[in-house]
Length: 185
Ligand SMILES: [Cu+2]
Image: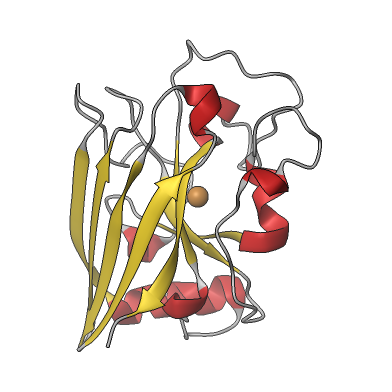
């Protein structure tokens, strides 16, 4: 059994008016990857896209900070995370092994901004699809970063805030929290 954990810290908190934080745990056990995410103080009553991001070449990803706001619009948007965090890799949705990023099966925060997400993923299927996308079956979890996204429509985002994923609204893709995944002893 191999266990990994990410301590997830707020990003863009000043603009979104809350401090999303929590943990993500990944446990590899035979052909099963158990994933558990618990988040507090996220924007309430909306769906939150969540993934791990990383570099296909194995470079160690780091969680973005406000230092990544290179266009100085006050927001770290998804494209601005890429130099330090890499690309969107695996969705923490209803079926992570399918690696289908844009969908509506991500967790929804309750009226307190809390959610818990827990799932068992067939590792072989995930690794096969991971290889198709990134050229290797090795997930290299300890080189990845967990991202949580999503702010309500009521938050006004400047035109300089960009998404990445097809034509999804930037409210869906704006990062609100991130944490580097570390291997546990
Ligand atoms: Cu993401």
